Each structure stands twice: as structure tokens, then as C-alpha cells.
Length: 235
Image (cartoon, rainbow, N blue to C red; front, side):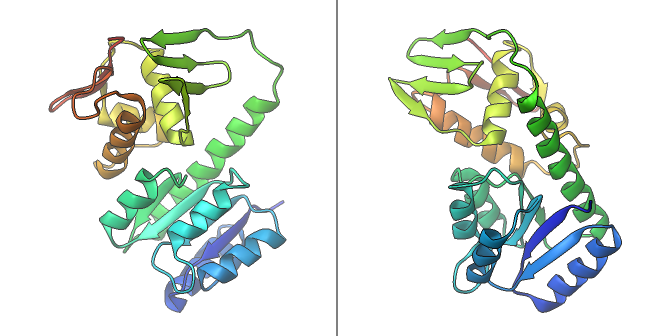
């Protein structure tokens, strides 16, 4: 059964190009030409991935992502020509999984779509497996991380993390004091080769610090090793 993608893109030429190319790759596509139409289409069917432009009429891409995330964990891949928009969509916790900068090649687009769907399928399969022995609750002062249910509590308040933020945090806390380069982080979290684009990693690290550190500008746990990468310190 072919995988079903919801494409939300107001540029007709880009939408037609994507529809033609992805259909040849074996995907089933439903296309919406503005955010309002895209949300309506999402309500009608179940999709394996949502591919959404950020700059759209009626309802913009970030609002589309926010609304979808209230009810679904479907992989969301965003397209944008502006790094600032990407920064907002990934950094404000709306829940986008990855992005492709415009202009893009279909080779890159197809690879990112395949990767996002594969990660989602793998995660769903793991969730269906029989329950594993409970992992410990890690405590760092007022920060508590439950690795079994993967909930994070700071100052007695539960912190909402995106899927990628959770993956990064789990990688860090289960490997304390290990230095991860940006290429290694990208490989472990995004499961694909690092192409030198630091924006996605920088945004996720910054937002994760803002959520778990008492003073994000002087982090105690997520340390930067300039020119090398990041590591977790228990503090």
C-alpha cells in the first residue's frame, strides 16, 4: 500500500512539480493550496506525512503545524525560503520534524521524506512491542527526567518537549560527559548524513536549554565545546 502524503503549498508550480515527482516515487498525494484547505483535508483522511510550506494565505504554515499537533504525531516536513521562519517553526515547539530550504532538489526532498516516514514507522513499532523493564528517574537538583515515560519535570512543572528535543535529551543523559559533534548528533537523531547545515541542530539545542536549564545563557547541563560540539554534564 502506497504511503499517503498531504502536500500544503500555495505555489502552483512547486505543488505540481512535487506532485509529479513524488507520484513517480510511488507516493499517493493529496494537495491543498492554502492552510485552511490543508487543515480540512487533514481532518478527512489519515496521512503518513504532511509536507507544508510556511508562507501561505488564510492560515500560515506554523498555525497549520500547531493545529495538527494538537491531535496527531504524524511526521511534518516544512518548506521555507527564510531561515527565520524555519527557526520559529522548529524552535517554538510547534512540532515540525525537519525542513527543506527552498530552492531544493527532488533528491534531497525524497530523501528527507523517506527518512521522516522511516523514523515514524520505527517509533510506532517500538511502541507496540512488549513493555521493557522500567528505566530510572534521573534527578539533577530540581530537574527530574523519567526515561520510562520520558517526562521531564523542572521546579515541579512538567516540561513539554518536542519529539526531537526528547531524542536529543535522552541521548545526552544516557551518555553523560560524552562529546557529540554536530555531525554525530545529526546522525543519531535524524538518522542521515550531516550536510553541514547547523541551523536545525542549533535551534533544537537552544530551545532544549530554554526548557531545562535554570539559566539558558549559562547552561549547567548542556555544555558547548566550541568548534567541537556538545556534551551533557550532570551538574
